[in-house]
Image 1 (tube, one colour):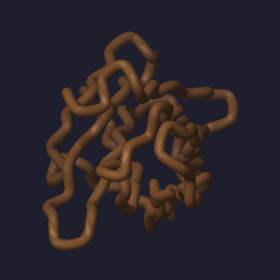
Image 2 (cartoon, one colour):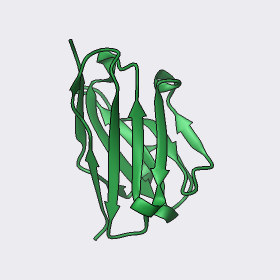
Image 3 (cartoon, helix red, strand yellow):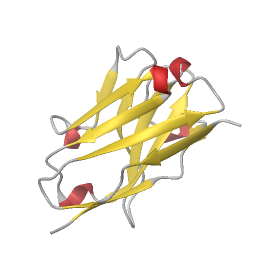
Image 4 (tube, helix red, strand yellow):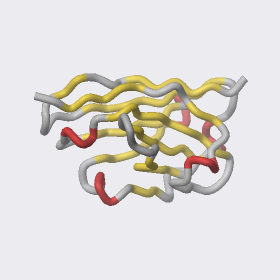
Length: 123
């Protein structure tokens, strides 16, 4: 059974950093594009970053460009999201998702999802 498990969420002060991990099991992550989405209370889920299976193509939402970096280690079946210069508006539940084709920030295109990890940015 394909499974994705996120980890690394935490409470962090504004300006701080976190690294989220998305570990896959039950399928070969190296043949899948992976995306990170986030959803804050009362808001729609938004795609914030994607990476293709070979780390050739990436996408970043405008609001996180220059602050977030997506990467993957196919040998470990894991994708990462390094988040820096965090802001209170980055507070959300962060999800990773995978699909066997090209990257897209559209959530409905992803069949595999994790349960999410909470990121809270507050002083």
